[in-house]
Amino acid sequence: MSVTACSPAPVNNRQRRAFWLRHLHQWHWISSALCLMAMLLFAATGITLNHSADIEAHPVVMTKTAQLPPALLATLVQKNHTDKDPLPADLRAWIEKNAAISVGQHSVEWSPEELYIALPRPGGDAWLRIELDSGKLEYEKTERGWVAYFNDLHKGRNTGNAWAWFIDFFAAACLIFCLTGLFLLQIHAGNRAATWPVVGLGLVLPLLLAIVFIH
Image (cartoon, rainbow, N blue to C red; front, side, top):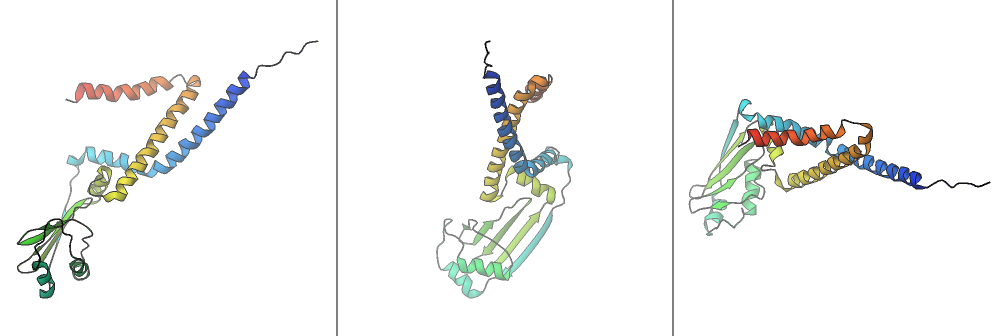
């Protein structure tokens, strides 16, 4: 009586498939969890940016004025400043304490008549100037609302390095989410006849729109 040994190939194929399914599902759900809220934010602001001309903004402008103490003003005019010179620490502290204005580490534009600091921000703008002959401080801040704020977050406009790093991290998580999804589609495509036609439509449709309607 002879015994025929079963080929290990089917078992190995099933083990390989199970290995890739397990790891792809794990990376897929982790990446989707990491980028879920940011993806909702970027999708929503994609709509608002696409229809920005139809969304009416109501800018709110706030102004402040103050007068520098003579001693502090004297320290400014005694030195010939250049645009590479930062704002003096004592002047920054006085502005933050007496005018409640945070100037951070923004660059300063020096001239013989005044110093000027541009203070751009998401969803608005601001600036500060000090007349070097009189010591008069003027500050103006413009807020364009929450829609403009989130639109600027979408574009990374005036958001600083921390947000730029977040966008890079979010983009990497989205790439992992999409690529693992693509491999999962490939694994399950044998049982879902519409898989590749739908994927092809998602590729061809924006390509046709770009070729036909964008000039």
